[in-house]
Length: 86
Image: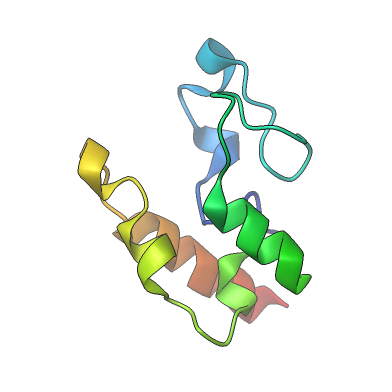
């Protein structure tokens, strides 16, 4: 079962409560107030998550969070796993 559009494991996220995040599957606006391009992209294509996209892994989802020091590999692996579960 998928937990997010980009592969973040929301159920195990340590910051979820701290920042008041309800997850991109349910929230209309991001907790930081800006736009999440990955969320917007998936929703505009009618996809549950990036792993369902023909262009996966695109540059946008691959680079997401890297500038802040986050490793994209676990997220991308989650998307691959969720795509197989379909």
